[in-house]
Length: 448
Ligand SMILES: Nc1ncnc2c1ncn2[C@@H]1O[C@H](COP(=O)(O)OP(=O)(O)OP(=O)(O)O)[C@@H](O)[C@H]1O
Ligand SMILES: [Mg+2]
Image (tube, rainbow, N blue to C red; front, side, top):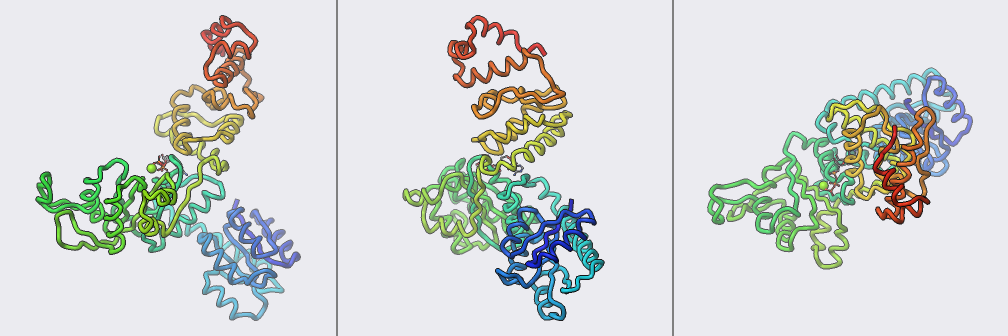
């Protein structure tokens, strides 16, 4: 449902607007102060914001600017006092979509202004979507506040000229995805995205890979070769696992970033390029700097715009949307038709720790889709560590999807086995059966 937020300190206005727009089948949120409004705009993902410029806590224009910065895709309609045309003009200049005059808000005008703003928002989104068919491949899925902010930041950065961006996050959190998203959403998308994994190349190779070499620069240099930096001109160079580069490579990279120019190995000529450098690391560069293993000056050069991607366990609202997205994707890839997860399965997924982050979730869903035989993925199909968790009731059944006692029993046995790290004598003791019985039950499998 399209959503509208009204920020106004007058309760009467809030109630009136909420009632009128509510009738138009819109989801309406209300806030009485600028601060509350800004928070709610992000939380509710408002498509249109109606903003009173006279607020008790802050200057309305300031709130408008903040809204435009944080949520560029949201349309803001301002409410001014009657006759304050200069204020309205100032607001339009700061990016408001339209304005309405108080105290006498004409209800049809209100409706029309909101409908028009919604149309604009949708048209803009559609253009963006078409424009970004390539970017669509690098869609950042998730509903958590952190991920929504990340998406906003990516579209903001895509439109900016910021030259160096450092992405930090645990393994599997989506660093490479974000780097590619940044490139394909930006005006640079018509030029190449070049990448190099710094952990995978040697110190000597680093320099010639990055800067290229002249013919005869070293024994194997049979011909002149352009480096990635040169190939990425007008585009993006992605240096993955930047924490792994040697001190010598750090010095060379620093010089290149400072001067925005470099020489090919064995070359004399300075080559100037226009390249956005995105680096990524799953280690703390600050810690490496403290240990003296990473140059502080290079760190500051790279860290102009830091992007921190939180681990999946700290943005649990992303888990179910991601799981559903990967389910659809895996169905397409593997030509399967598994429709959904049982509600209990989703609950278990959402409460898991995900040490391997999004990559681990994606791999699991693929495995479930490949092995799945039913329409719905049941909790019993999840690996033992999901079912063996102490804070999760084991084998809770959902009505309508009843299973045999033997199947439930087996699920429980497996979870106990996980719990005692596979020790069968221990498991038998916990279960109150003999080892022989345990072995027999495991051999028989479920009687489904
Ligand atoms: N928010 C997301 N939406 C959709 N897919 C995602 C998301 N985050 C990560 N993925 C997917 O998860 C997988 C892992 O992501 P990615 O390779 O970008 O992680 P990484 O942080 O670079 O990991 P590593 O540090 O191990 O290199 C990829 O297949 C990626 O497409
Ligand atoms: Mg990566």
